[in-house]
Image (cartoon, rainbow, N blue to C red):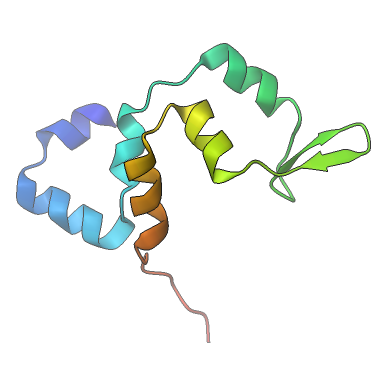
Length: 89
């Protein structure tokens, strides 16, 4: 995906940003693979939280930022941009 992104010119990248927000920032985030695998073992896909025995934990934005080693600037941008969502009538 990085190779495809790098081949696009600025006009195509801006169009992508318009439709999908700051999603491309995720391409350049360095993540601790071992930490991610450990956390993934306890992740509940249906409810989007981690389960440890009978305790359910929902990560905060700060915890996601630490896990993904993402700057606070990108996190704020991701939550402030409206993404085009399909509506079903």
